Every structure is written in C-alpha cells, then in structure tokens.
Amino acid sequence: MKLLVVGSGGREHAIIKKLKENPAVTRIYAVPGNGGIAKDAECVSIPATDVAAVTEFAVENGVDYCVVAPDDPLVLGMVDALEEKGIPCFGPRKNAAIIEGSKVFSKNLMKKYGIPTARYEVFSDAAAASRYLQTAPIPTVVKADGLALGKGVIIAETREQAIDAVRSMMEDKKFGKSGDQIVIEEFLTGPEVSVLSFTDGNVVVPMVSSMDHKRAGDGDTGLNTGGMGTIAPNPCYTEEIAERCMKEIFLPTVRAMKNEGRTFKGCLYFGLMLTEDGPKVIEYNCRFGDPETQVVLPLLESDLLTVMQAVTEEKLAECEVRFSDRSACCVIMASEGYPLSYEKGFAISIPESLEDHVYVAGAKLENGALLSNGGRVLGVTAVEDTLSDAVKTAYGYAEKISFKNAFYRRDIGRKALKIAEVK
Image 1 (cartoon, rainbow, N blue to C red):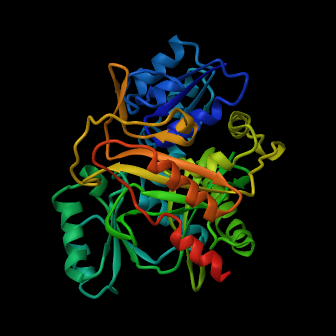
Image 2 (image 1 turned 90 degrees about the horizontal axis):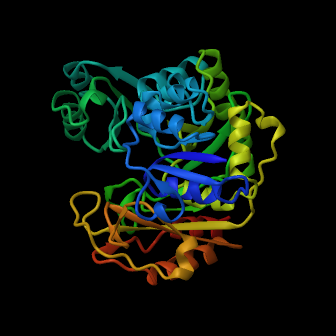
C-alpha cells in the first residue's frame, strides 16, 4: 500500500514513523518532507501548499491513501482535490477546515451552539476596534481571523499593547489578509490542556491529553514559539473534566459542524482552558498539533493507519482505539535565536541508538550529512511508566545529541510534575 503524507515537520515525522508500523504499507512519500524524514519516507520536493502539483503527483504515482497534516493545505482544499481524483484522505475537507482557518467562524459557531468559550467581539474596522478597546477589560486577547503561523494571537496587558496589536494586524497587515478581520476576546485564566481527537463526523475519540510549553525560555519566559516541548498525559485533565468536555464541548462541536453542512473528518484539536467556571475552548485546530503529536502518537497502541481509514470511511465507532497508560515527554531542540533570527546549516549528531526517539523538524540532507535548517530542529521523545521518568529520560537523550547553536528549555514537564504531586 502506497501512502502520501503532506508536510515537513516533526509532526509529520511522528505520523510517518507510526504509519510504518503497519505491515501493509510498502511505500511512504513525504511532500516535501525534510532531511530527517528522508530516512523513513521518500521525500518529494513539492510545496505542501501546491494543491494541484500534490494531487497530480498522487495520481501519477498510484497513491492509495493520503494524510494531509498541516493547516494551510487543509484550508486550501487539498483533501477535496485528492478525493475528487478518487484518493481517500485523512483530514477535513475545505468547508470543515474553516474551523481553524477562521477564528470569526469558530467563535460564532460556539456562540450559536452554546459551546463554552471566552466572550468576544468581531471587528473589520481598525478604528472601531480601537474605540472598543478604550473601555474593554484589560488584559485582553487580540486574534487575527485567519492562519498566521501560530503567531496571530496577542495577549495584551495594557490598552496601548492592545491598540498596537490592532494596528499591526489590520493596518500594517503583519499577517496579510488574515488580519482583515480580528477577534477581541476576554482574557481567561486557568490551566491549559490540549486534547487531540479522532472524529469521523459522528463520534469523537479523544487521544491522550497533553501540556504544551509555548514560551522560549525556562519558567515560561521569553517569546511565544510554536512549542518548546510537551508532556502527556496532562495531570490537570481528570476523568471528571474529560467527561464534562465530551458532553459540553467535543460532541456539541462535531454535531454543530455536521448541522452546518460541514462534517468534520480527521483530527480535531481542542485547545482548552480549565477556568473556575469550567472548561472553555481557547482555539480549535483542524489537524494534529505540533509538538503534541510527538508525545501522543508514541502512546497509541492501536494501528494508526487502521484508525485513520476508519475515520475516512465513517466507521470509527467500529474501531478500537487504545492508548497506553504510560507517560511521554518531548523536548524540542531549537536553533539559538528562535523564534526570531537564527543561523542554519550546522551538522547534527544523533547516536544511532537514539534515532527511534527523535523526530526531525527542521533539517536538510547535504552530501549525506544532516544539517540544521529551521528554528525548531529536533523533537526528542521518551516514553516511560511515570512522567518523572519520561522527563528524566528525554533530557538524558537530548544531552547525547548535538549541533552548533542548539538550545532547549530545561524545565519541560516541571509544572506538570508539581501539579501531579499536589494531586
């Protein structure tokens, strides 16, 4: 069976390594992939957003099944294009991917169907947004409507910061058309939880919960990043909260999408905040999270391809999806200077014994050597019986891996371990 995985990061590497476990898989193409992924799949240098070229490649090479992993090609309608050519896919069609592609859409959906989220206002005029901010509660959150590489959300501690965020998004067009409309919403407080879920539009099967670490520096200091590490499961996410989320958020969201004629099939990511008033949705993603995937999939005991096909065929209710009760920790090794400017092109040294524990995010192959080629370069993951052991092992692995200008946070999992001790 020939598979095609669209994307080029650590998330895609984790997906590919898990798909390889199915003995029916004979070949995996990665479009475009990266230098590390090249060890596990055949990389093809087509941009992930080139819907026409990816579709043409899939048809010409007899691809049997495709996994579209990143947000951009999903929002552009890559699944629609592939399915029209008879190639089954894992991932939502364009009209369902809008749940991430437009924050205005997702907030209005939640409001219409009574799904708990922060109070908000929508603006398409910068002057009107600035006037609103003169009296709005502070701190507040300003969000660009469309995709912005995970950087279109500003938590403003002062009115000046909030107005600057509006100006940057709407007038200076920092995020292009993504800032044509913005959402200004209530600032919520409480522990954050990421819950990825399989859904075929009818049933929802949550994966193991996780805790991301977004800031670049220890102690949650420094700039926001795409994620500097993650652990699973999240100790804040109890069975009681999970039941409440299923009843108040997960199933209502999937049913709302179906009711709107936008049946969602694929991985639906719920970014949650556990407030004093109960769990609320901070954001939806229409795909696997990164680096959450790097701790969640290693805990999946069921065959990933079988589960994905059940989602595609709307037979998820008939498919057993099992997760280990062990714990996982992923430490991101990044290039010094990330998420701003950084140097690239440094040789990466990974002991052969650790290759199964490393997901490559930003690297290229040059004359047989693996070189750093991005901000987030590697995800180093360990699975152990306890979270403390998983954290200890992941850092032990990271210490044996090297490239010039590498840095990583030294406190991934520390907050979770403190919470777990209290409980």
